[in-house]
Image (tube, rainbow, N blue to C red; front, side, top):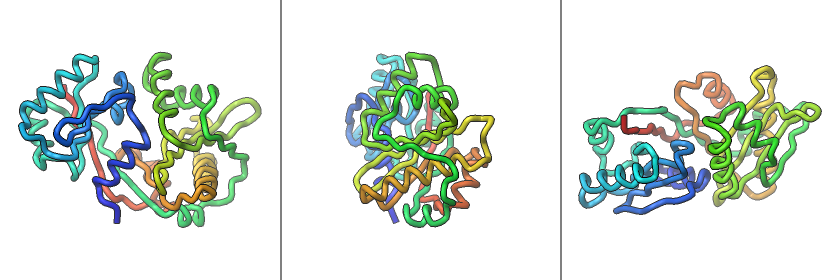
Length: 247
């Protein structure tokens, strides 16, 4: 069974921030405020002076125009960091489950796609535009910043098209012998037609060619439709996290 700390490390590499600063075991990630994952502290070890460390984080983030945020899991240190942040006025955001599976097991449960799934090592403009239109947060500047995240790590990109139009996409980050599923998005008018499963199948099938045997994903706890799909496919919850964001 993979540890939460190891899982956090894989996810950090699968969605890399532009800049990061290490502080006594804390990784302070910064990416112009685009996505919480890339603009939050990953607290892997306890700093010598917690109060000074919190002051440093808040001053650094505020200097960059970023809301101070922490990614809190069972591996967060110190162990009472969540309570300390709550007392400091930080609010909980986005409780999330981390799930894992063997690639071969997922492929065995997925039906063969009835649509063509195009796989590429990089996203083109149409892929990025579709992703931002369906699941983006912000305008053109934020989209450009998010696109830089995609290009920092090794990954596979899937797209299903109908004529000239994209109808579904997905990203599979490749880290060591693991893969991470991100950016799964389907046209709102074409959901519940198997397109998400086709994208997952295409990505994982391509990953096996590169010797990738395991896959993780992060799903928001409140996203019942996505959780139902992943449960059917055999993903197992291995850890969870939430963010503490300064109010």
